[in-house]
Image (cartoon, rainbow, N blue to C red; front, side):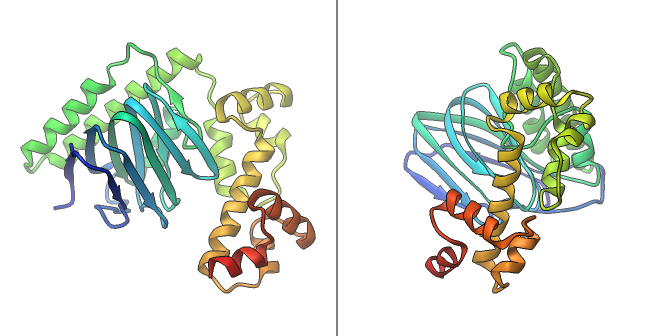
Length: 283
């Protein structure tokens, strides 16, 4: 069965991965909901996916706190906050405290990213703080109820209900943040971080001056645009060092650093090891 509902309510510490759990990439329809999930438990929940999923991973935290690492960023997600991890991005999250309760959806489709851009919903490490009066839980309930029907209209109904969730998220973000989101430039960075990116060009994408853009970027992402780009490059370098035998100077070039010595200094400042020492220790 392609679509499924997953509910976890356990009484012990759980460490799990989701490498192959309905992780599907597809362009058979504009929006496809692969999995709907509800995690409501008093245990510590740890998830580590070293290779990432093939679909998008949306989590809406209702109670508790999650520490999340993905897409070049690390953040503590609090109650009422939401984030989306893009496809093929390694991630890790761990809950803290006595109780954790979150709702999530794994989704894909030919227009998945287009819909996120349309509704101005950014990807992690950006975190969306939703307004307290949003109706998102009711939207999730409708989605979960649809899974129970499991009829010939399931996939179409899930797509409709999920788009309503995206609309509700967009409304809640706009109410909370005043509508100032940087999804266009952030997506550009995520897709072109190995290229030579200039901050004035990013600001122009959002119709802002550089000063305002830098200010809003740091407010939204917690770090400067330059630091964000560097984190993505170094994470890419780490992935290549761990998974390939490619020469380190070629890795530096692929990650946007034409000067090998400069790449080595940046890499060591982020990981406390040189690229060669990191590869040796990993092996």
